[in-house]
Length: 120
Image (cartoon, rainbow, N blue to C red; front, side):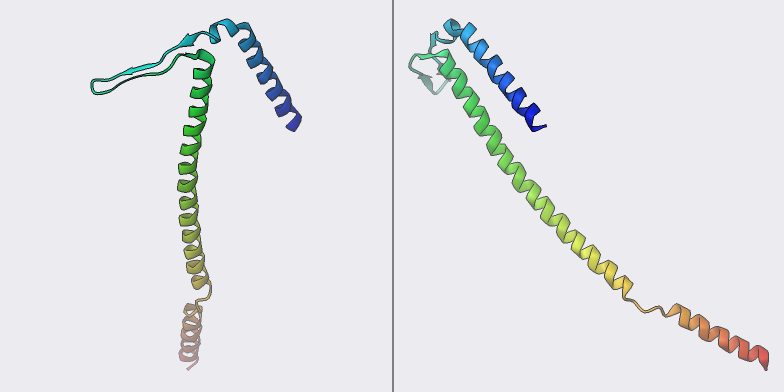
């Protein structure tokens, strides 16, 4: 399985390299990004398109990682809650296991008294 992942990774990288080489002219074109809101206007310096793509990719990785951290904390909290609940249920189950069996003794005593009355 490890070899399959390595081969798949190499093929994906090769595919990306082919796309970049074939579209180098379009990716090298410069562009300027603008944000024009009612209260704020901003314009970037001219930059190549491939830089915009790389920045967008890295921003996506950052956001996904940040969301992954929150998900991990949520799951840790859930694991802690479930573990605590499991310990409580184990304690309750053990308390039921350690209860004395009283009903059988009462029945045995009642049977002995009934047998003695019938014998008389």
